[in-house]
Every structure is written in structure tokens, then in C-alpha cells.
Image 1 (cartoon, one colour):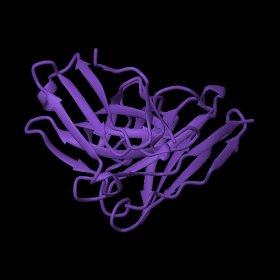
Image 2: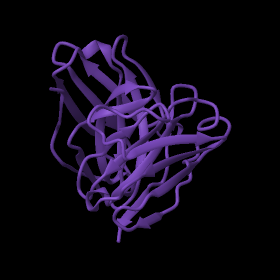
Image 3: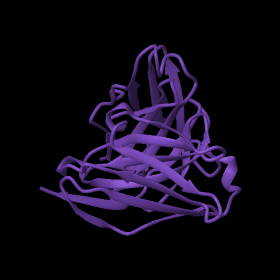
Length: 118
Length: 110
């Protein structure tokens, strides 16, 4: 079955960078785009961006354009999201999610809590 | 890329039906057939329950249904059960390979 396993929680200081990984299994890796979604404590879901696994092309939400980079390593079936210049309001659980069709996400990683201190 | 608008809360008694709205614009909800709904129980990972406005993934009870009228999409939960108590989020394709979420609705089963 599909599994998305993310790296562990991170504690960073403001201004630092963080890189979160998402290791996939159970499906044909190159057939499905992958997304990153974040959720601040007690808040709603926020779309961060997408990576087209076939060619590594990326699209980011406008508010993250300057600070986020999504990459992948096909041999290990692992996705990465790196965010720079972290601020306390970047504190959130970051999820990777697999596309299903119609721009929906049918499988989600367990989430990675990134905490940014002032 | 403004967030879609959902009511913060909704409620109903067991057996009743509840409708949760999701209001967007003619550039997202009203234009693309790519509205999805997610259910998120407290402390859990979101679960896809509706995609393509009206389609249900395998395993999702038919008590959950989706629709759209103009720029507003709706999720109807019929025959409410205690286990339906959760947060519900809509999302829509917004063009230029981007997606936008709603702010979420907390559904309480009375």
C-alpha cells in the first residue's frame, strides 16, 4: 500500500533553514505529482507547493516563492522541501501528499512539526 | 491566491443532515471541476473524502456527497454519526498549477 514517511520534528531559530524529507513507497513513483501542505497549530491547511515528479518541475504558492525549494531523489523515491529565512509564524506541521487527480491528494505523510523560535 | 471561505462551525444531531459551504470565485471554485473535501479528526492526518466536486474515493461512505452551484461548493453529510465529528476543509484548483484551501469548518455532532 502507499506509504509516505516523513523525517522527524525540527527545532530551528528564526533566520535559519530547514529541510524535511518524505520517503515514498507502494506505488509507481513517477506517475504521481507530490504536494506539500502545512498546518500551523490550531489553524487550517495551507498549500505550499507542488513538484512534478516526471521532470522535477515545481510550482509554489506566491507567499513562499522566495523561501521554498522542493526537490526529489528518484532512486530513493524521496521528496524534500527546504524553507529558508524561517520566522516564528512558519511554525507548523508540514505534510507531503500524493496527487490523486483533479488536484486532490489521496495519501498523506504523517507530518513533520517544524518549530521556529524567535 | 485568497483562501476559500468556509463557515467556522457547523452542527447537527445524529441522523440529521448537515451542509458545509465553500465559497470561492469565478477563477477557482466556479471555473474548475477540481473541488475536493478533506476530513481531519483531531490530531490526525487529513483524509480525502470528495474530489472532482462530486466523486468519492473508494471506501468513503455515500453519506458524504459534494455539489457546486456557481462559485460555491458544498459538502453534505447525511445520516450524521458521532464519528463524523471532525474538521472539514475544501480545496480548489486555482489556475497556474496552484491550489487553494478553505479555512476549515469544525463539525460538531450534538
